[in-house]
Length: 567
Image (cartoon, rainbow, N blue to C red; front, side, top):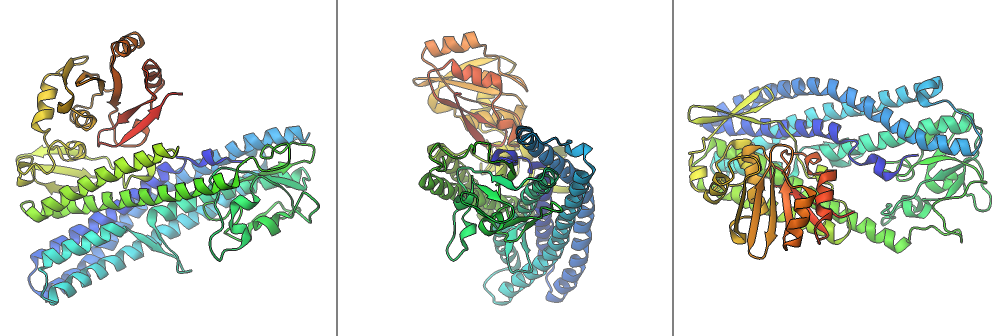
């Protein structure tokens, strides 16, 4: 049996691959549309449009070919890990039931089930990529047509029309349309496919042991925040109604209702094949519930002494609503980040456009406000911030100098951007901002540069006014140098300490001395751009324990941050 925690971050690598695909499609589309702006005749644009459709498809298919090999290997690893995690729990239960069973890797029937589930999921993912390629072609054609229509109306120039339709495209991202009429973002479609596959593969393996052991009962897991029934949905769509109970596979009896009738999931006791009869129920889309073999002699861990579910119904509903709100905030943040990506490309094509510079700055400010609101919401409501859901793509970008021009390398593609002396930086729209410093080699602002000048080597220390430095400044210094920095605050003063790429030299004894002197630990930085670099180390937790404060924060090289708490 898998728990909800067994699904957390497991799909990160696969999602990173597909985020890269979405990022590639957005930027490829933007570049082709922006390039069309140099063509003045409508006829020329029509020829260009047809040519670009072919080139775009060729580029996307080439990207998909590279993606397929990586995704297959990662999918196989992911499903095997899920099966072995589930087996560890099932094995303990089977032992309590005095049933002997071989591990999944030693059981030929189980290995066959694993391979069948892998092939099924691989087919679903590859069909998803083909659908995405087709949709990208339709999007490119529709966007070009829309830009032409706006120009024909006489209200916009071609470049203005292109910028506007690209902004709208970036706002919604790349979508996948299903034959049922359902529409999902590419990331949501991949996440749903992977999480559902992990669950169903583990369930099918569990079913083999249920059949081999002749089990007649199964226990379904329970967790806080389980899905609640929506309007006009069947009863089984409310996962909170059937979680944490024991069910009979065939028939029913008092205290043991029928599994299929209650949850929408069926198990053939002869073959061990599980079947999701209703995708709104157990093991359906995005379901995080699992089941395992059970016996009446065992105590149900999800029930109290009175036989009632230990999870309060109202508390579960409240948690579900909060998590749905959290998902909505995450979608909004991803939308802003996609818009920033495309706006940066628009600026590359027209670096002296003051309106574009203002729009880019406004998007950066919006993202900052969204990040702050998200962290506050999670902290106030006891939710774990899911920083992996906030990313658009974690691309490896390197900046190399070539005369007066920077070159951003994205895989095998190179895009020319304005140098650090361009009007963008002169108007101070990006100077001092961590993400721009890391990815575009933008300069520190004057205040940050003065601070770095006073911290020129490992273990350098300086005390300055509280009003002259904040954690975003330290994030910018980390983006510039690749080193960690720590901040301690006392009244109107702040002590800043420079570390190296892996640590800041603050011993536990020194931490206790700082605390005794009245300092609080405002936070520190970790070099990197992903969510993994925001995880506190055991040393971070030990240092925090020395201070009379409940929490501190970690910033990465692009200004994302995580608040961690005392254990």
